[in-house]
Length: 56
Image 1 (tube, one colour):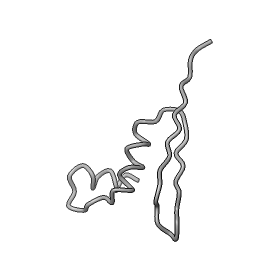
Image 2 (image 1 turned 90 degrees about the vertical axis):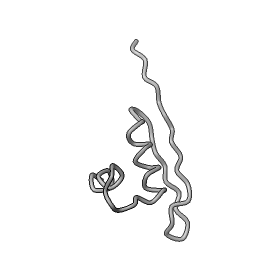
Image 3 (image 1 turned 120 degrees about the vertical axis):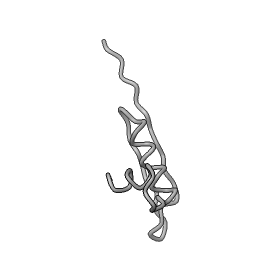
Image 4 (image 1 turned 180 degrees about the vertical axis):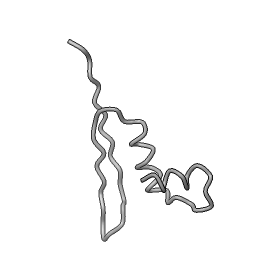
């Protein structure tokens, strides 16, 4: 995963949009789930479910 982040931060390689979407979701998410939908070997959808935790 770090190689993708390095490429995104200014490396000469271009990160595919789908991979960048997943990386962005991971950076923003504190609690929750990321669901990837794949059709015929290609990522077609990214669903992010965010959970909010409140102290009792």
